[in-house]
Length: 76
Image (cartoon, rainbow, N blue to C red; front, side, top):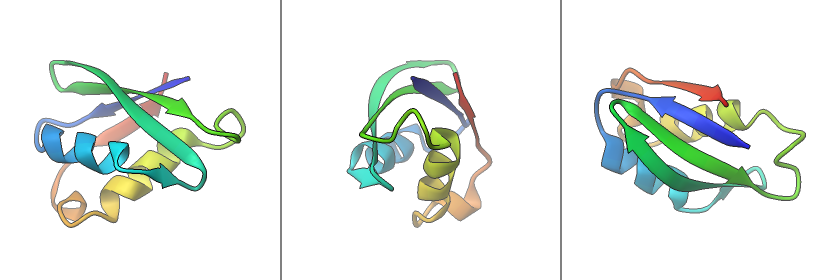
């Protein structure tokens, strides 16, 4: 399963944040960038049963920069 993070700013920080570890048992691996879209693969024991997009969104929002940027996360 993959997720798309759409944001016009802070791509490097978003990649670093999501790739830095596991969140609620889910890990994200950066796949690629196309324009303002960042694609991540989702892995983990419960990756198929949780809302990975919501987990990624919460991880970005809780970062030091996340409250100040416009972004969206969708499950692909």
